[in-house]
Length: 229
Image 1: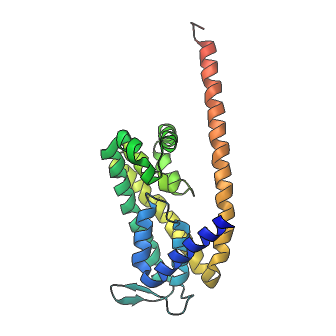
Image 2: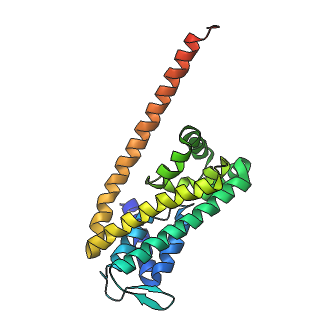
Image 3: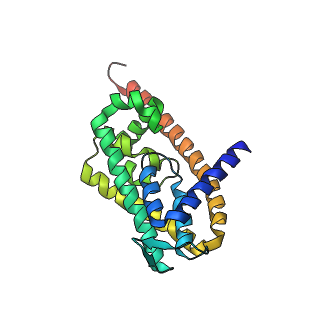
């Protein structure tokens, strides 16, 4: 009950902020989410619902000009999320690149990156390389922990930015589209997606376990086949 209450308060704060500040709130929240989890799914789904004109008194405004409800407002919300997330990701990459592993070991707790998570992220990058960035941007619970490790691993900037832009655009346009289609019933999609998050988390655990077993078996086989064994 306590966790549900906290999540409800966070969701209410996010939706209220988007209702008050529209595009600017979407941009800033997605910028933060690139480094620290800021409920990007809620941000984009609710933003899409606002773009559909689902709530009286809430509209998409850009520099004092109201953007028409419907596709123009949807595109503006999705682009704001994509650009904000990409810029935040570049900032996270720079923190990892210039701060390096020693900096994160000292201060990573403030970025929700303890040594265990950092080790796991490094193994992820070593194994999957470019796919770690692109797939990570599309994976719930993981997507906010890609930017800084990518900098630590010195992922090439242009390649990293393009992969992040592609992944974040897919995420933002898809979830804003879901909110746009759901309208006032956006919370139904939000609650349904929470079950998907649990499934994804379980799938990640199974995948990691499989990789560990595969790695151990491969090491054992190579050891048995080596001449000195």
